[in-house]
Image (tube, rainbow, N blue to C red; front, side, top):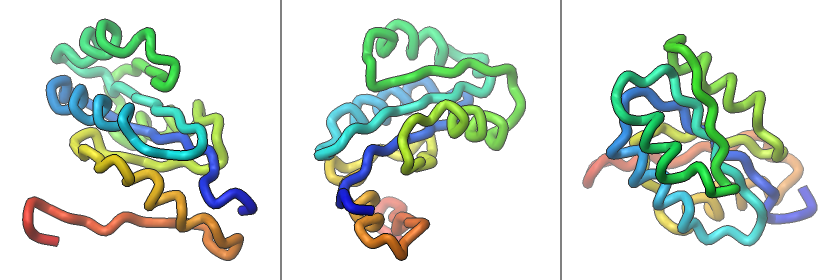
Length: 129
């Protein structure tokens, strides 16, 4: 890709995770990224307060798109989110991962070479990897 930082769509499939998801989205909105990005939250029929939290806290945020589905599993939710993505780079993010400010920049910079078609993160689990 010519642009080192392409526009990106971040897809988050979620189910019954309102308190943590709110922290994830708050962190996502603080990302330092020099191109456009959108956040697509695909709710897989949550029975807790996830839908209400999303609508009350983020409905007016143009960066966040919301999809509300019946419970069909994480794959169905991710696929629905991917189908709504408008940017060429699609990143699947777990609903309990709170990103660092430079996370998206680090991930997307891997696409600077036209020879690269997929990028993966390094897993880090509370002091272990």
